[in-house]
Amino acid sequence: GRRRPAKKSKGKKILLWTGGTMALVVLAAGTAGYLYLQHLNDNIESLPDDGAGTGGFQKDQAINILLIGTDKRTGSGNEGYGDNGSAGHADTTILLHVSKDRSNATALSIPRDLIVDIPDCPTTQEDGSTKVIPGSTGVRFNQSLGQSGRTPSCTMRTVTELTGVRPDNFMVADFNAVKTLTSAVGGVEVCLAKDINDPDSHLNLPAGKHTIEGEDALAFVRTRHSVGFGGDLSRIEIQQQFLSSLMRKLKSNDTLTSPSKMVKLAEAGTKALTVDSTLDDIGKLKDLGLELGKLNTKNLSFVTVPVRDNPAEKVKATVVLQEEPARQVFDMIKEDVSFTEVKKKESEKEKKEKAAVAARLEGEKSDPSEVRVRVLNGGAPDGSAQRELLYLQNEAGVTKSENAGDADAEVA
Image: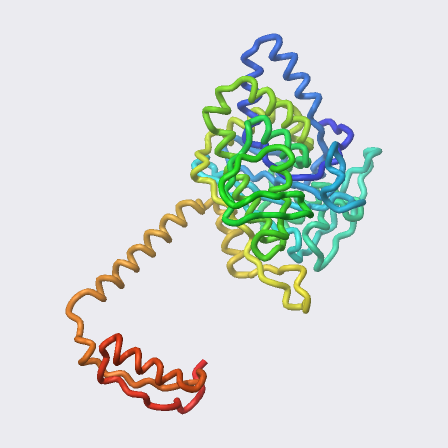
């Protein structure tokens, strides 16, 4: 494919689902549609995948798309976001797996602070030559992009090294994608359990339901200091909530039956995207969009790579794999297993177990006055056993209970 000058990409990743529908809308407009398609085609920017991908998605196979957002500040109105002077690291990364039968999909979030090994990366330079950028051992995942001149193809290689899944294609979207796409669909609904006031992301919203777009939408997906534990994992959770809501809005009749919204989406999407060179024209994006459009978003599962705090650090800043759970997740994706179906089976199993416990508790019960209880203090404050005894005798009716003093050993 052709190489265009790289758009300086830097944000989130949310427009992939609309590509096919947008292309079909303009195709239906005849000659004018054709000219508009050419315009959209010129909007698309591409970079080589350097052989890191499979060569592009296939219609009769499962699809794996690597969606990348970076922390670069370029773009109108984005000076206050990201890290000043950043080379554009992999700030937000999702491996989107769509099943072979298109019945389900899994969006796997990869924490930017996950410690990984980055392999050697053959990388196409601006002059067309290839340079091998040396790998790094035991570094943050986000360094797979931007650091030392690494491009998205190196992030692809790092994902393959980490998960065993080789992506078909990559897409990088900028901060403006969040702002323009949410505005194009008339906003996205989110629900906050508590007030959020995060001066770093510029988000200030009270608890409750909100329809957000533009700057508020960008602030929402970037906030982390005012949610959860204030780290990247908390931000991943809020991004997943946002993406789930956006997917539903993109697939809604309100969006799909509105030519004006679809044109806005087409314009915003093609301007915001940087794709790999096997996916560098609107026709290929249309074909991908048609495949993704077959999916019922109810069967889209959001999953985060299982991690734990890095035990080598006193001040917790990075995370490492929980090896066994992570391998199970990676294997499920490689083997095209539906996370939705697994969750359904687990839920049904839990319901059966709860029903079995409830059934065992049914039947005749002894009168409390016939139950004997010995209370021992195994390490609680003095008087705890006596207080429990008084409760049993005076409120629970267990009159044959006794205070047996201290246990032989402290009970954990």
